[in-house]
Image 1 (tube, rainbow, N blue to C red):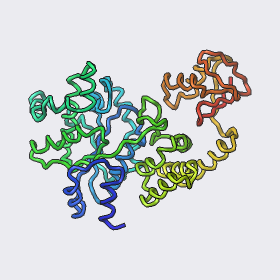
Image 2 (cartoon, rainbow, N blue to C red):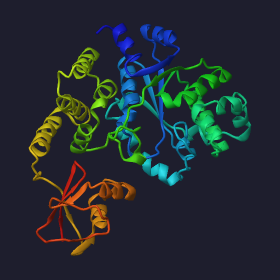
Image 3 (cartoon, rainbow, N blue to C red):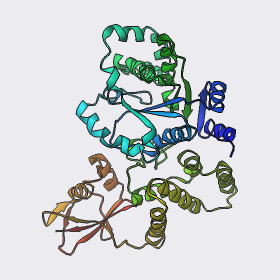
Image 4 (cartoon, rainbow, N blue to C red):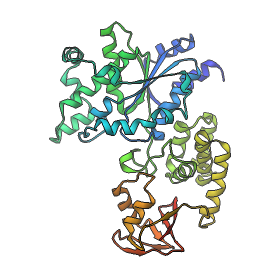
Length: 399
């Protein structure tokens, strides 16, 4: 692939909009070392593969010789962005944000060469702003600009509260671009207003307006928007078994989208997959196996991905119970279904609501017997019970 072909794919694959396309392409063709920015707020401990869409774009820019600027939004994470929300997002505590972001750089390193990445935490500059500077920033925007946004307009029309804090968030993200002198910023389509804020503010600081590359959003394992609060994410920190199994559980209609956005399989091959699916010339399960192998290999290596294919086929296709399942020891001879699952998922950080939903939907069984009452008492045997929770999780429960 020629340099121009690489650039064309960078600016089109999984991309919704580029501002300014011609300006950015010209700079890349000239070999300019552009400063390419991505900011992620640590609203949960895990970066999911919805974020990998932008991270893979950063890697593409990095491979073209650009300087990657990775910003962890430790300050904006406390404030909260409601760009894609139908209601006001609660503020997080500084302690929660600090805990969430503990492994963010390590997770980003699964895709980026961090030795060549400039890492910042935006509290470095945002904490230093005084009211005078914030007033100057705010003067560059009108209230009409803010309320014209679709989700804000909808909330106002429905009589829902919109806080002044939400008005300030785009200013802060825009100022991030000023602070790092960004030439390009990457973000999802839900970030359009925030991305444009950087273009608006930079000229006021005698900087050229950054170009913007907006990527499509991908859906989660249940076909809804990928969200940690819904438990439908595939996380970069998932172990190989979790990752492979989650990918195998996505709806068939998401297969092509995941190939485009979450892998770097050549597009001519992806287009062939799409054609074969449309003409029913291929079993979606076979393509999903290829997808799961490709993504798992990206984060865990080829040998581990091959191991997970064998495990999946043996366990799920042949309906066998796996033999190498984790053992959980309970401290008492009896416990409720809910208590046992809390213990089993202690390291997976599943929320109480996720566990209750799994139980009520019939996704929990002990020795093959489904239990959908979270308060039901289970007799725990010394020799152990086999717990299956969802499609992917098996445990041996012993007293």
